[in-house]
Length: 535
Ligand code: G4P
Image: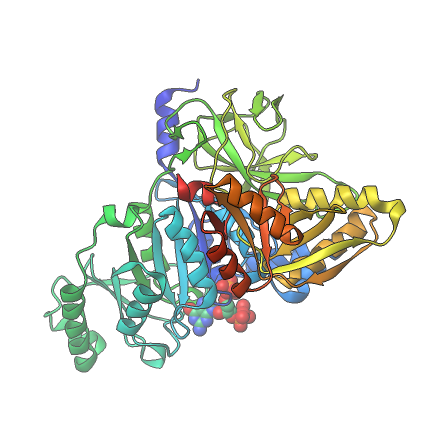
């Protein structure tokens, strides 16, 4: 019998987070090590092998294999230290940044992996912007300490500077590269000695209750010991003591050092994560704030995954549960369609396996088989008419017009492009006259994926013609007159997005600036989250 206590307990032990990084910093390796600790996989290499196996199953996924990236975002669940952990994986490739942004709406916290030699890279900065916008708590892991990189203090300064967040080291490295001896755990006052080891998952910790202890000199040598003492002194002088509330508010990011590939520093990270990271958080809907304790089920779709087998057109919608308990075979309300639906085969994701589940709790992500009912951002409830908000679209970077090459196939093309847009593969802007379809993406790779899928899955015959736009800006206005003037003057550069919002397609930064100057009552937003910004 389902009881309130069981529900609260189940909710509180869930930890749903995403790992983000610039490609190659070590996200996949870190994910794999966390799964090893959680016992969800047995051997190193399983995550990567899984990627390759998947890509061998269809031609479409050949694109992924060839480029060595993960197109799909997946979910991995495991139990550790009494917590039920859900890792939401995100594609590292920059062309799929939009996918990552959306996944970040479904997590409660984030682990950011940084390469100690490269520091803050372009992709890291962009992803962190999204975290800051949502005030997502972040833990930073500085990886690859077994290689020579930047000095620890310089890295911390760089993080604060470029990511606009305060940091607080919780471990401290002893040397780096060839001289890397391990990390000192500032809080537990333990010395964790480094031994390159790619398979073992235990870590031996020497307890050093006082840094003045001469054992330290015996273990790591006199000079490194003195250096460590000085550095820890500086750390304590420069950084405020760690405060969990500041972390939870997204103001301060605790920092760990280690080497993911060598399983080093990962356990400290995971243990601390379990201790400090937030349990499932509520989400804002258009009518009210929905808290996880609310026993009426609600959730939202943040990702739609096309079936890789073109013979079976069904898709999987990834739903994040916000409140209440989800039950298999029970009717829930699809708010946008105003329709009740039940789900006989909801799935959970346990590392490499998908399995049917009977129920799920706030913080969980479940897969719902879908034959075209879902769009990104859709809300399911127990009957209540409300929509979760805050799954933003960002201005695309590359624009191309979709041209139909075979008038007899226009139906297929129309259906195909609509479905791909529902999946969030790209954004579509419709321009009049002529119903012209301008497709916008973050990277070139999506056009290849879309073209391939339109031809192979939908039988369309089409091509893309580059259009020279710089940004798509959503428009809000405080003067109907100015808006009408703007529409008249710029009709060639206006379009409607998928929700029929008005969008200005600016050709250059200069033309955007001119528009801002000439029409001061209009605001040009580069993300569709402007509704959130202005509320
Ligand atoms: P990503 O998902 O962020 O793109 O990065 P991924 O984990 O695939 O790691 C990128 C490369 O960095 C991999 O090497 C990986 O082995 C290496 N790496 C990860 N953590 C560490 C670390 O702590 N120290 C060192 N020295 N290297 C690390 P690769 O050559 O691209 O792949 P592989 O053949 O080693 O698997």
